[in-house]
Image (cartoon, rainbow over all chains, first blue to last red):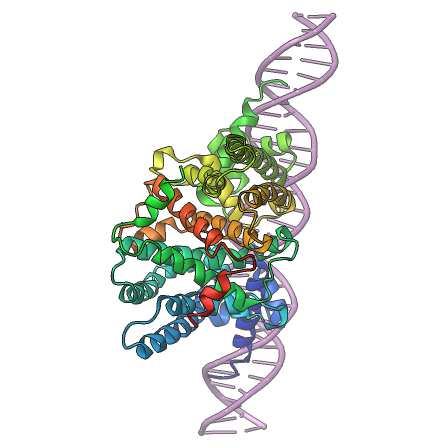
Length: 223
Length: 223
DNA sequence: TTGCAATTCAAACAGTTGTATGAAACTATC
DNA sequence: GATAGTTTCATACAACTGTTTGAATTGCAA
């Protein structure tokens, strides 16, 4: 046991720096300086830099997934096994968007770290990341129960597009603000969530009478 | 003038390696080995590694933007100044998707390089990247002309979501294939383009009678 | 206090990175 | 064919990376 103080100071400093500046250009020396500990402490407590990153990622990954699944479970129980698709999508993208957008002082370091992890591809994380597929499968299952007439292909595409809009908006929030000259307000997080959920819902329910990839026909007309 | 052979060999090798492995872990020595030239050649011909990356990015950026604008211009001229929104969106996301997806042997190194550039954030590129906003503004203008009843905010959000779906699908194509157990066919590029265009069109035209952010009401009902 | 393990620390290590150097090899002009 | 300018090359350099080492310090039990 012992103090544990150094250990958690390193974790906190590392998470903060990675969230802000990305994995690429944060060195061990940056981390220990920020944490106010000795350089050798990282290797002593974690073994290596990669293991530090991995531990950070696993911890946060578990926490984020639990949060999302909590919302999902609650929604499905309330609906007797079937939740409205909008609520499922909200459980999927809401926690991340809320953690990464909004006024600077209320952004979660943890959420921003996770976005970094999903963007930059660093070896120790890549190795673990496959497990997240199981997590997404649970959401795919809930979406299937919510939209039983929908083909699997459409479910997966809808899931993909929902994540796409959420992650891309976070990643490019600065550019979107500049492009729109401030008209798109990324501090109004609930509006952003509502927009993403709305579009994803449309993607998943358009042409709902057919069962086989109806989105294609609609777009083909435009060619 | 002189031979120029070494110069272009370096450019080609660098683009290939960056497209495949990202900027993070491609060293000058990797590049010169792939190009079959001496280590000092990069600094001799380009001055520094950063200037090599910058030249590569500027060249490709101009080419990609020209291709997209060509499609856009053609569509607007054919429609007498107003192009259908689907065609505009297709001009926006089509070239990139076609260059990055599809069977391995027909993927464009250039397009994959550009996606890398838009994903990983490396200093020399970040400095140049702001210019791309002007390019996107041209598309925003065309979309405004196509949907004159739409508010600027909705236009920008639609543009953002269209790019989001295209880029995210490219970035996470492997995961989507695995998640869907191959049901989502990412080799059928035209299907992917059609899906993205279709959803983006819905995002931009839903509730088309109103002028003020109608997407919000739809999602709010679901809360 | 003594003794022992856990922790911290300054320093050095080995490896890799981008860059610079000066001699050698070319190429074209006179 | 000698000369001047360009391009290539092997090599060295300085800076930085993650990691290791072994001595100092700390904390705690006997």
